[in-house]
Length: 95
Image (cartoon, rainbow, N blue to C red; front, side, top):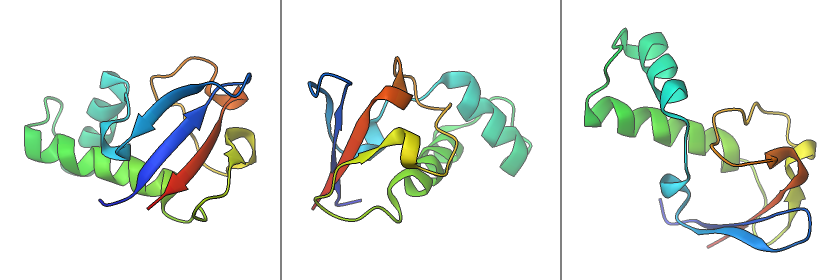
């Protein structure tokens, strides 16, 4: 994935900057999704990678480049992200 993201908190401080595949994801959400897709309660690295990529693609797949958007405006569940007060944050996708 060649995209780059920036996540800002409510005070517009950068709380994450980098490759979206490196976003912090709740371990139990990876396990839940792995069970759903692969019936694997203890996912191997291949299954983990697939699940992470599917979460990230869901998050940034349709977002415009260089436009900051509030997480509240997104029509997806972001509960899988392991970030505090994510609904008060915003995201920008860069190339």
